[in-house]
Length: 124
Image (cartoon, rainbow, N blue to C red; front, top):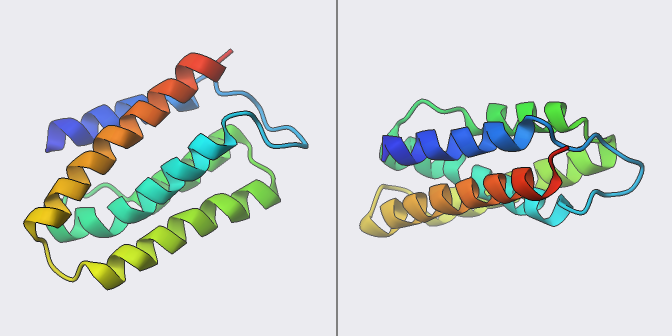
């Protein structure tokens, strides 16, 4: 599982390095960023429940937003996506179950794919 976390964080770093600078309008990759924020919100809860990797997913999103130089509107939407999914998963998963572990693994894989795709398609 820790290899998946490393893969996810490596892909996230790739997405951050050379990402397109902020514009007055949403960048083409905004939907992927919002999905990534949702995933990170779920992982913020599920990681603590099942893996205890020590990754601070909230801080990772904050760093991602800083590096992407998002404007206040995008920052609020990304934080909102993170918080909504965190709250949903906090209410629906109170202990680590097989389902929660499976979701954690799937979110790590999906997050790594999204991060990689953003980097490949939109990095300068």
